Length: 567
Ligand SMILES: [Ca+2]
Image (cartoon, rainbow, N blue to C red; front, top):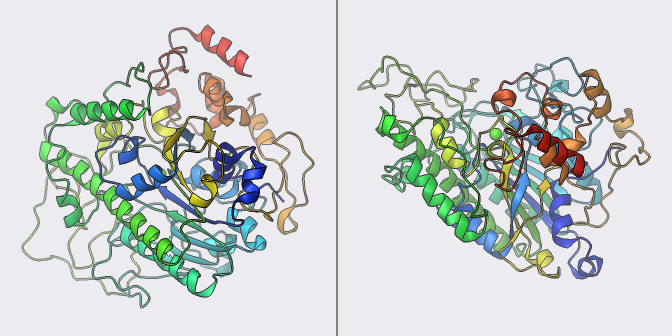
């Protein structure tokens, strides 16, 4: 059985390790809620310098801690695989996305030689809930029951409401699923909102699971994994949320970035000596479709605002049911802001007709597409610069320049292993746990580097079995899980690629920085042919900080020296 060492390990390791005396006084078996946003930049949250109103997450940060150097794996699927299993994504079978690349590290499906956090916690007495985006199996619409082998209920969760696929309309998501069955959002007897919007549906079900748990399973602790699809494209939001941001982005990219940098410096999140990354994605002066660009960011902000509103409902439910103090809440992002150009193109713009030109869809129709052909009420989906984003009949990304703003002060985006791709906020809140640890002032910044897949230090909940893995110090490997032989994939994988350095050298605390300065190791990380990995040549951290890098490009020998010292 493989090891259980997830994001929790990093957090607990940093907050409470080594403080066994403090842990002895902390209530045992806390509830654990993991909240993850999708394609969101390092500085979008208010408590990380953003102008977007996120009062509920800000309050958790104020009552807990914020990590300044926390890292994901730069893209949806590998981050989820790593988070769920505590392994490198390749070891879990998801080194890239959902396609099978012919190597065990790249099957696009969680393998049977890993153990999910839910599979580890449930035998220890936890109830396990999952809400939102799954995205660790290619079997979205399996013809056979057996094809659901990697759906949440088959990987340790007691309850599930969400989407199996990785993206879709917020007003009509494809692959919407309750437990083990696809459902239509418009014919769901268990959830009948006035108007369906996926972020609300995720938050409402998270709050519902908290309430149901307190009513039916109060004697047990619970794990809940809340994987939002906001603010991943499409830029879809409710009109009343968009209205809050009307005019807020009229000043353009540079002004918003500068304001963020100023706030981040004042908060102590970034070193004032750092030079911020260059503006990318086109200058504001050159923008031809300003109304379109402004609306993109207004909608993006509204999506995050709505996510945060739901965090407030979850917190209120925890308080109402008396579970707030002994619940560890972690908030983080699966990757940085996204520069993909979804729906952003010139071309003939077809204005909206007076009446829906298409017949409406039946309420129980299971909408199958990531980009629907039409809305439920008969409007065709429109794209292009001439269509203002936000409504159900639109489908756009917010583009490179706003992603550059989201990732302030860092370089690059989702896909890349530069800071803009992999740096994420981490807010950790746990009154009963954090208060018992020495020198843990609420609201403080934790500057220790940490990663989704952290050292094996999980002490959050006594009684949880922590499997070991030979990739971590050569310990004896425990028996296989479910009778399958369990072995590390990494060594074989990277030998097959003709590389000599193991992947762990690319992500472990401290060493991570040097690895990102070396091209060979960069390809070790993600040998998927993505041109993003060669877009910026060798870079490393130096005195200028991670935004620009100060060692690699101009002086490769210094980068090698740095790597040699750190390894
Ligand atoms: Ca993502």
